Length: 79
Image (cartoon, rainbow, N blue to C red):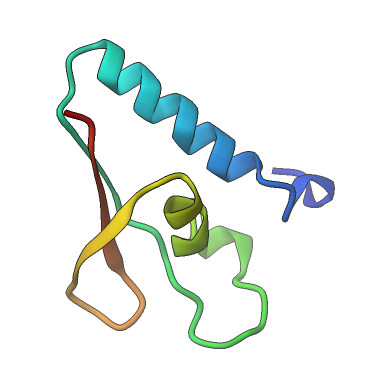
């Protein structure tokens, strides 16, 4: 994604659209596996392609597990 689109809510809107589509197709749960930066610095784009937790939280997901310090499991129940 072009840098000019960062921090404008594009990822959050894509997550919302994806969950609405999943729901329309009969899905009951949607999960995501974002990367949480270790510091306040920007995460390199090559590591952020699965998203960051804030975008998932803003889209209505909740953290349900964390198996490593930087990899939360985010879930949204659609039922």
